[in-house]
Image (cartoon, rainbow, N blue to C red):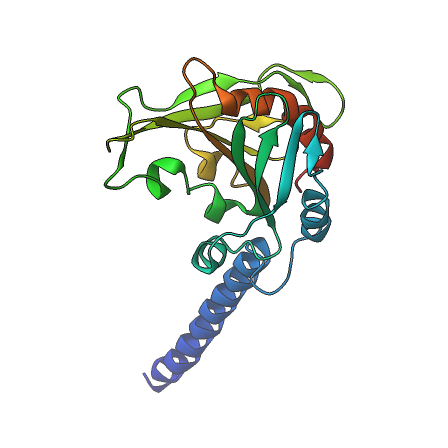
Length: 227
């Protein structure tokens, strides 16, 4: 009887050690996967390359770099990991706004215009978001006809009227994807790229799409394969 009792504290202590070891292993694994303590391999290079996207692409020129709000940067954890610019077409005088970032998969992919845009003056049109194809080359130089971005439109309810069109999607180095559930789809990638382009629709002209058609082939040269 005494021997049986004496084993219980030892068994309990051993069980606690095993439990602590399991928790520690999980914590380290999650910390590495989420870059809690350090940047992922390749992310610094991706950040640097992203900022090298030219201010002039064809007929489109950006006056200068803009900045996101400090809250947005902190929420998305994209310090030094994004560009946001206003490009103007020298021939048509059309303007677009582009924000492109590279960062942690689970954070940046869940933010979309449907969540972050709107309010009293704007409401989403009744069509919802539509996947729009953008045939491009992938990072190996092969044709990839599966490139696509989501398109969603917001209508201005004020007396000014007007409609703003957004295009957005995710890229892990092999093409843009309009994915229904990017957080799950790309969970195996520690970081991803995200692009968002917006413009006021001018009659029958889709200015944002025209910019993307013209500029995505160049932007492709500044995207690295995600690891």
